[in-house]
Length: 331
Ligand code: SAM
Ligand code: SF4
Image 1 (cartoon, rainbow, N blue to C red):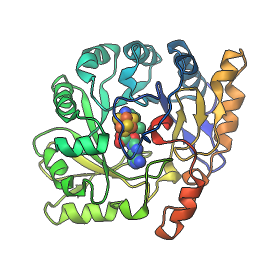
Image 2 (cartoon, rainbow, N blue to C red):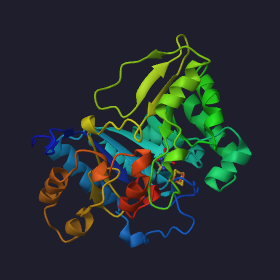
Image 3 (cartoon, helix red, strand yellow):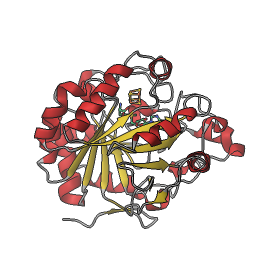
């Protein structure tokens, strides 16, 4: 095995997100513009191409964790086969999903070897769900989350907290962890193309802790070395909660993540503005290892080279964003 993929800032990379489809059956306002165009089928990586790229990252560069995402990964008819093939590489494989069609796949995913799901849920209110996700799917999503939990999947619930939209539900999400062994993660609202981000719409990490602390006392838990989330627990409660503070306290210094989009482009950061086309090179029969190594070497120290997300930098951030919305980056 080659030494792990290192960048010029001393970080090594052990974790890979692979988007396997850019389409979605929800249209969350913070993620997908209404007029989003999707890739044609032949532009997407095939199952074999996903696995070939994953294999190279695992066998040559020691990647240990792979997360399949999208768009909505469960929209791919071959999702369970992909999970099985990637699990066979001997790495931990998780999936990030909106859970709409999870009831059809949960047993298959378990049998294929995956035990961990990150599920998006931004509200417990069906009407509000419809406004945020532009689809009327709350009942289906919540029922599927409970089903997957009952079937033994480890569940992390991702809530994107937006000021004035769903910040009044933070306590309800924390209180879910009293009797449920689930892991709630509050994500600061991040800027991406077409998502109407404004610094004033970000409900901050500090505000979250202040709000939760005004009602519940909680303790800090140890975070894994490369964790993006800062984890807490209300003592005696079954689950945990955490904050992903990309906007107000970025964790770029310990980032070990790399990304591949559904059309096989490599991104060294969520906010990267440059991409490397691995799939075209793979289809031409070329060795893609030098492309991967060059992509990692070009990784910026912070936020893909964007200015820090301070209020006075808002115009600069919005101007400098990559052209991609989150739905086609793969979170
Ligand atoms: N469809 C799947 C889902 O919703 O979980 C996977 C793809 S989605 C792009 C991955 C994650 O990105 C979700 O947890 C979603 O909440 C998060 N996300 C999308 N846009 C975001 C934004 N603007 N700020 C913070 N998180 C965002
Ligand atoms: Fe779809 Fe997930 Fe984006 Fe919502 S967050 S539009 S479910 S990809």
